[in-house]
Amino acid sequence: MNPSTTLPFDASMTVGACVANAPQTARILEELQIDFCCGGHRTLAEACAEKGIKEDALITRLVEATKEIADDSQTGWRRASATELCDHIEQTHHAFLRRELPRLSDLVDKVAQAHGDRHPEAVEVRTVFGELRAELEPHMLKEEGILFPAIRQLEQSETLPSLPFETVDNPIRMMEHEHDAAGDALKRIRQLTHDFQAPSDACPTWHVMLDGLRHLETDLHQHIHKENNLLFPNAQRLEAACQSN
Image (cartoon, rainbow, N blue to C red):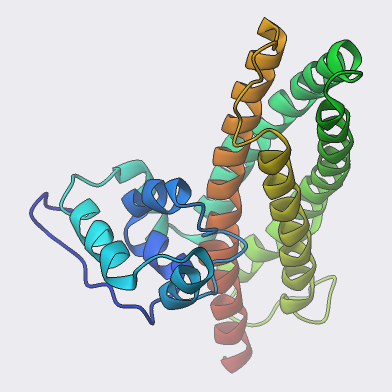
């Protein structure tokens, strides 16, 4: 994108479309705690009403953001094939989760054990994170073993191939439901950690834990956005095209 180019925004645009068209706007939405992954179907007007933000002020900031040089690594995914997106999600976001989830489990457990008597919220963080991990690990296996291979097959076929489910809509609905649950867990962790701010008596491990949880939230927001707003609609279009042939 040319640095002087701006994109049109209006209050009826969905949050997901906003980030899909201009990935650099994600930082603004994250700053305002506007969910662009699981909540990507909402319009900017609805998001502003929920957060008590003036629509004109937000749209002005979004337009200003598009004047900046776009991150090609993010912008390119809107034009990527379904297979390229599946590969990228597995190699980048799934790999990140497989690396970080065990590490963060150790950290939240250490913090809860050391500080849980004075900070019961640390114990709840451990509980919520444990539930999140228990949801994400089988979720990735279902995507890698069932949904993503089917999407790759749809992209390679001219007519509808034999799939292990009636329609791609069925596993997509399941994945989106699990994304919603992950989004709720992230919001709860952010609440419990006071927006990832350590208390005055926090030990170094607590600070490391918060940094890891913050990065987990950021990566999961991008991960879910790419699936909900880019990959899944692409898969549905591919299936429709195969059915029409």
